[in-house]
Amino acid sequence: MKFKIIPAQINEFEVFGKDKKEIWIWVTWGRYDWTKFHTNDFEIFKNCKTVAEIQKLLDKKIQTIQPINKDKKDGYHVDFDNKSWNDAYNTQTLSKALGSIGSLEDDAFMNESSGGGSSAQVYLWKNVSKEEKKQTKTYEQEEYTLEDAAESFRDEVLTEAFEYSALETITLYRAPLKVVEAMDDNDEDDGSDEDDGSNPPSQIE
Image (cartoon, rainbow, N blue to C red; front, side):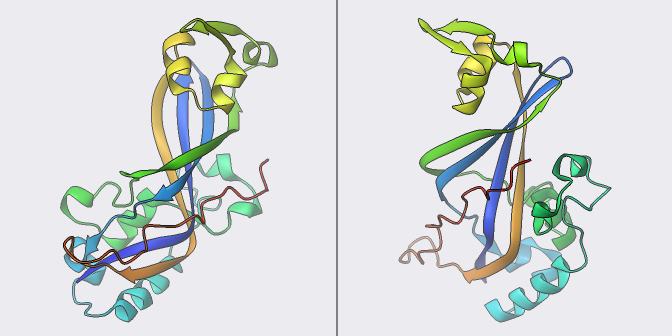
């Protein structure tokens, strides 16, 4: 049986670094193409025959794991240390908890396809001074400050002009998570890909 797991909200952070400095950019896409799974992709869902069965097991499993702001095993929990993240789960933790199999083992929920325009804002500056944020560089005959490049998610300016490295993407799923049956590729679209519930909440520390 094929299905999709769609969060109430998805939060993605693109992390750039140089020396001990880090810039976390919160990127929101207008559309997410949710990954299509088969029940055999997860140990926990192997014997499920209906969406209701998958949903019941998923809901129970969510209750057994910690949200990122409380999960001390997650190295990033200190970066989300406030109550506004009480319903947010690192997708790697979620993938591991559900027993993802094979090529999905590391992070079954990694965003592989999104679009429809994006918005961005800096969530976190680490060891970057006010003076450094105002430093300017020229890229393709245009001048940018580090802050402007980060706030507008000009990753090529950050990496080529300011010489930051793209370190990783941190993805959080916010509960509740909804299970939706997925049709085969040759069937009509089930409509679940179109989701705009990804706008960042107002609480940014």
